[in-house]
Image 1: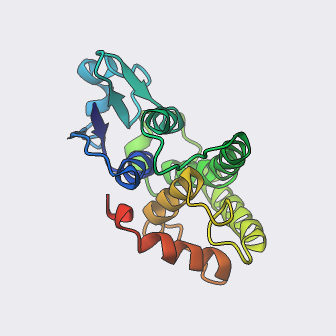
Image 2 (image 1 turned 90 degrees about the horizontal axis):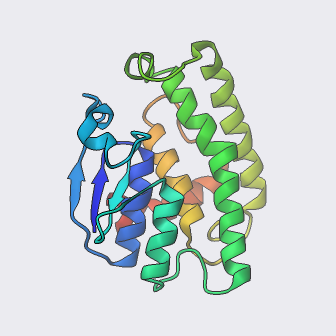
Length: 203
């Protein structure tokens, strides 16, 4: 396997997942600032142009972070980061989907339409006037999540999972870029600090 990676929260999700699995996967960095991911060489691997992308031993490629992590979990089930039972896997997928749609998507689009506008305005449709509202939406959902985190170590209770990795990757990426973590959300702030202390957070 070989991981094509870059800056940004999506590649960080997969790098953290790989680190938590204890795997060694060669990494090739793609410069998305210079638009290398929009050139024919990379588009031949992932026609959508996004990062990360995982090259498999049979010459095929996987993209989209959930698909890559699901594949790695099936190939290397221990330690489990999605689950070992149908109930655990379903709960992880439920929370991964919730944080992705309700928090991560608004955050990344707020960046693309706001602080990152100069990079993205000629690459994708952008709506600059939507950035403040998207930031508020993400913060409101984080406050909602804070109310559900009392007494829980992780999003899925006492299990550290892909859902935690995804949310942490986005919060840590955008905290210094116009979307700081609201420390009044004490449950989420405590959870964030616990994840930041894991070795994989430096992946």
